[in-house]
Length: 287
Image (cartoon, rainbow, N blue to C red; front, side, top):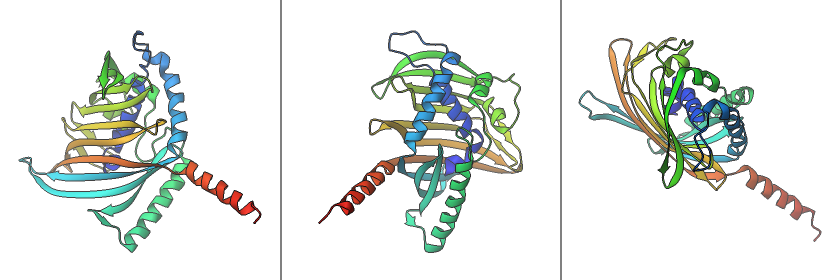
């Protein structure tokens, strides 16, 4: 929840960058292909994975630390969520706060919040951000320069690696596009599966957020993201980590470090359907 709330302005940008980099997928000895040429294939692959992803749920444990000017931790808060997907959008249901289960009142409020979010997800097209500004992949291609394409082993798997940086001279509109110009990073793509295995990105310049937020994300704020293959069929998040430095309302400094660990992946839809079929079969049998 922290990542999606606090980094919503460029979370969709990072996803688009990841898909953009994923275009470099060919057999190990083949030359690296033209990125634009393979974009349509990558997008179609993502749509297919979205459908499988909706069969899964998993636990996300997130920790946020407030840091003082000397780099010391002032405050630590943790949250545990049950994550699932609706129409390609991730939904998080909070189940614990600071390692304690939500009380009855908190559970009711969370159920109401999640219900509204699910309804919104059902009406929001796939690929469009559920919360916060969005940016298309084709637009990212115009804003980002991709360079230094290469092959590397990541966790013993062959990957395609790309560096990317926002073009300062690109004409942009909206918060997500404006933020893209301030980003630089590297992405590791699993070559066989065309999936993002690891992503690192950071702000290389201050970015002023508008629209009532009145905050400036400072240069050096960074983000790391990891995925792994689950059950031999689908890639899901395994964790993330980052540091954000910002100035709020021109007088308050914010320094936070966050980390996320994702685990306990469960495929629920197929299993539930199978159990239903077995129950019907049993009930139809004559004694």
